[in-house]
Amino acid sequence: KSGSRLKGHGFGPAAIAWQPNGDRLASAGQDGVVRSWNTATASEVAALEGGAAWVERVKGDADGTLLAARAGKKTRIWDSVGNLVQELPAQAGTVTDLAWRPGTNHLTVLGYGAANIYDSATGQLVKSFAWKGSPLALAWSPDGKVLAHGNQDSTVHFWYAATGVDLQMSGFPSKVRELAWEHGSRFRATGGGPMPCLWDCGGPKGPEGSTPQMLEGHEENLSALAYQARGYLLASAALDGRVMLWQPANKKAPKVGEFRFEGEATTLAWSPDDKSLAAGSDHGAVVM
Image (tube, rainbow, N blue to C red; front, side, top):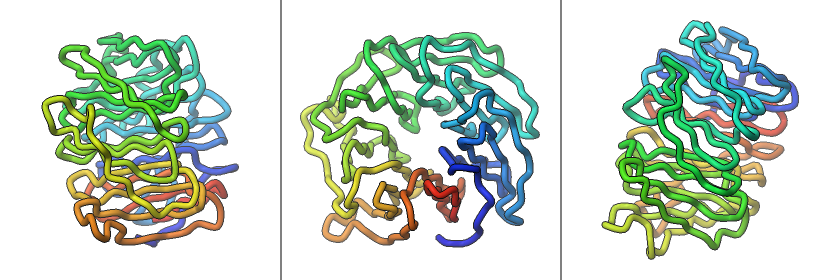
């Protein structure tokens, strides 16, 4: 929905994330700062130093007690009042994405050659999924059983956490930076082009060998995908400036809404109660 407009970041926000504790929204940008906002008053609560000139990822944990951000090879974790609690070991290459594993205090740090999982309390490495390639974005299934990451070579890699069994999906039009899971862990949405692709992961072999549902509407490549935490709406953002809402279960008319920025739509985040959607643009605006 449209509502408050926040000051944002110089040169544009790179990432936004809702924090479950009240009306809090976190954003990161090309000014090297992670900002925490009170959305009820549209005011800034805290400005945290990200550790590099650009901060490109920010992720809040499920209960709103921790906030993680990455800048370059560094990953930092703060508590709910802005105290720095961990700076994780520098990765071999640039960190490309972060994700909290559901049901744990473990943070997954993605970079060239591996997805490394750390205990946020101790900073210790818990598990590593080694992969020879350049991963760009990752997403855990809500049940914490499956880790997926999109890659530079236009593929998606898929890991079963308990066994380490993996599979790979290829044939996307471009590099895959956009991934989102439906709350029941059955459906996964992927980008890698102008159309969100919905994969049914509920069968015994997961999405292997299945044909995805394709959602047509964007004119240029996607930049972000986000499912509601408990609902069935999927949001997509693209370089054409459009933010679209989809109800994929309605196969005949899945599109249910649209908003358009003057520039490129760059990032998305649903509020914890699924009632608000935040979107950012390359002009620096954050709209709810």
